[in-house]
Amino acid sequence: MIEINQLSKKYKGADHFSVHNMDLRIGEGEIFGLLGPNGAGKTTLISILCSLLKPTSGSFSINGLNYASNKKELKQLIGIVPQEYALYPSLTAFENLVYFGSMYGLKGKSLKDDIAEHLNTLGLSDFAHRPIKTFSGGMKRRVNLISGILHRPQVLFLDEPTVGVDVQSRNAIIEHLEQLNAQGTTIVYTSHHLNEAEQFCTRVAIIDRGKVICKGAPKTLIAQHRNAEHLEDLFLALTGKALRDHA
Image (tube, rainbow, N blue to C red; front, side, top):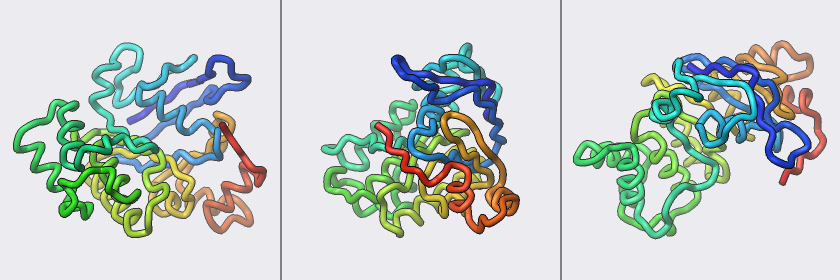
């Protein structure tokens, strides 16, 4: 589904590449985790794949569509759920979702029915007509997720979709994502919750300093590394324990 070839990104004025000569393949129907320390290049890579950033060099394609020649068609295939809330606080949940759905060309009864279904599945029906500014962090995360999947994308990019939420919200989000994946959506996901990634992802790539340092099924990678019982053990063994403060 996604093919990345020698992809690099260096920001203006930066001393180092954020993504450097990266090669990666992500298959159709996978739940693929991009894992790494702060500043490893995860968000930069997702931003490039979503056509929000232009790469310095290299290329990528999604479902056979090349960024250089099929940018508009490529954007129609994907959904994005950013780490920051992409919602209007003074609008209600329903009003936000109608607005974002209209941006994808959705409208009428079918859009309203889809919104109602997602809100119900994620336990938000009773709050549909309340302003987003009154919502808890977990509730905002769930509305944020719905806004990125209303158009039923073939590929869904998620940047820290469960950060800062309560256990119940995290469980609801993960279950909903698993349902989407079962219906055929390929998911590309970043998270610092390594226990969550170990259970959720079919494959992961650990990246550091803009490069892939290992990739594979979580259980396989753990088994290949002595003294690693969990993905977190493997992660620390490969990336070190030094703090990675990043601004």
